[in-house]
Image 1 (cartoon, rainbow, N blue to C red):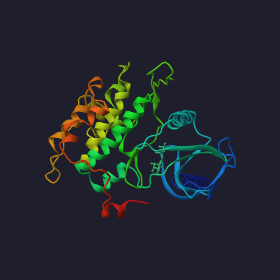
Image 2: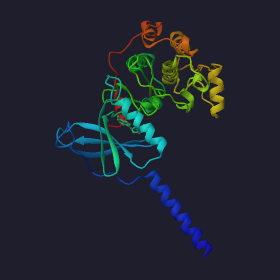
Image 3: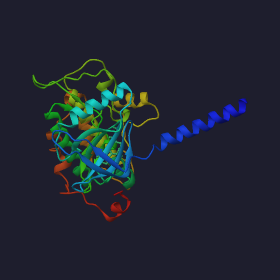
Image 4: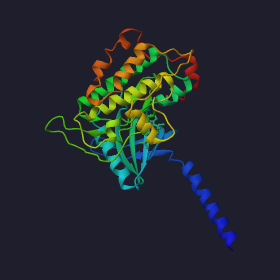
Length: 324
Ligand code: ADP
């Protein structure tokens, strides 16, 4: 009997792990219930899977009325309290934002026990996948994407929003290969005026490789928003070399290296990195009060000494490998 019990248990475990990797297929149609600004509601035809995140799953979807495509983000309603808080913050902050380099938020609604968000569709995946596939970008491309991301950061900071989880995996690419900052699950509002609502978080957030050292220290300096500039410095390094600068096998070691600013540029003869590129990165990986703001970053010689493409050059090679 014992062996049959064990066998049954093993089979159940296998089934559960399979279900985890392959969640049940979504409905082929999703109905947005009527609301004050959309009296008749709406219908979306659900298409292919775009990706899975920590608490959400995203599909390509088409609005039946207009044929316009969106990213449909599905979140299970029964989730842990911590996740609900993350999700609420994301909703509150993301719905107030409109910028050409930030994933546009459209609508949020509930249908059959799930919460749905409709977002601007970014059909070319994330910057992380692109950089991996291309084994690093050219300096012209790095200038192009840095200017776009710096523009998004400037806009967020002017609105009193700190993203706090900027990384290549959270920067998505639209059909023209423009960068769009997404995932506001860890974002926070800061007090910049009397009418600003404060969300103070004591929990550690962000991704080890991209996290600024001052987040690890107790006490605040009044330069909270500068954590996004640190992350941008890491992103530039990673776009040029494919890896974040403080990469290590343990989180503690990543933090130690970040604190001590211990990083090396690869000495690869095939990929020569200009002194200006190295300088702009090192200008950002400094103490929070010394970091440049987005306007100052784009005035750096790295941007003025070389070519900046007017739009992303979608080479045929990239088009072949990029998902549509
Ligand atoms: P989570 O908040 O759970 O981390 P994400 O927002 O990262 O979820 O979304 C999960 C995945 O869905 C992403 O890794 C990406 O592959 C895909 N995705 C998210 N937003 C979009 C979008 N606007 N366009 C295309 N794909 C997206």
